[in-house]
Image 1 (tube, rainbow, N blue to C red):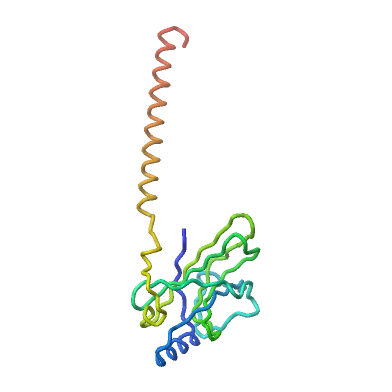
Image 2: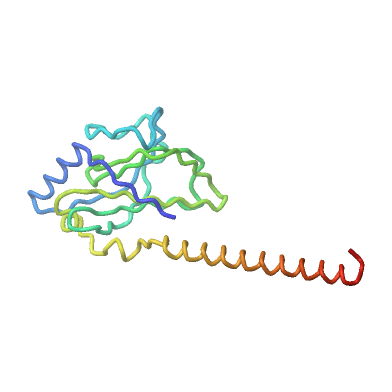
Amino acid sequence: MTDIISGTVTDAGARYIAQKAASLEPVVVTHFILANVPGVDETTPADPSMGIPTEYLIDDFVAVQDPHYNDDNAVTYSLVLDSSVGDYDFNYYGIVTDSGELLAYSYIPLNKKRKDIGQVINRNLVVPFSNAKQLTGADLPLESWQFDYEAEMLAMQTCIMQNSAATISALSSAIKNHERLLTLEGKL
């Protein structure tokens, strides 16, 4: 399943957004960056004053797709690492603007990306800011591509458990009937 994580907008990102809004220009994100920053994980508080962690970058130009909007004030950027990329570990990902600023980032649990074994990693970064939908030009709602399969999975699990219970009951009945038959024949 795809993870959706809310990103922390950096101070530089906030200035970039303000400049674009003031000049009525679009907010443009060009790529994701990935890093393996020592000593951090998903519980590490984000620091808005942080810049690009250049000394820990492991992939510094992962293509970004057009954002989808969550609502008027939040958009989601999707990262897809297909099976052709790797081998590396990362615990940080961020998005960079067309002018090179780190717009937003997030610390995540350590991910081990391995090449050519069929491993694909999908991550989504929600970036909240005023008028995000309008400023980024996001025209597709999040619901159009993010599906919550929780209800379907629960229904499948329930069905499997019911089928398993019915199978066990039928086998138990068959064993008891077989034991009765063997008893009647004097073989037990």
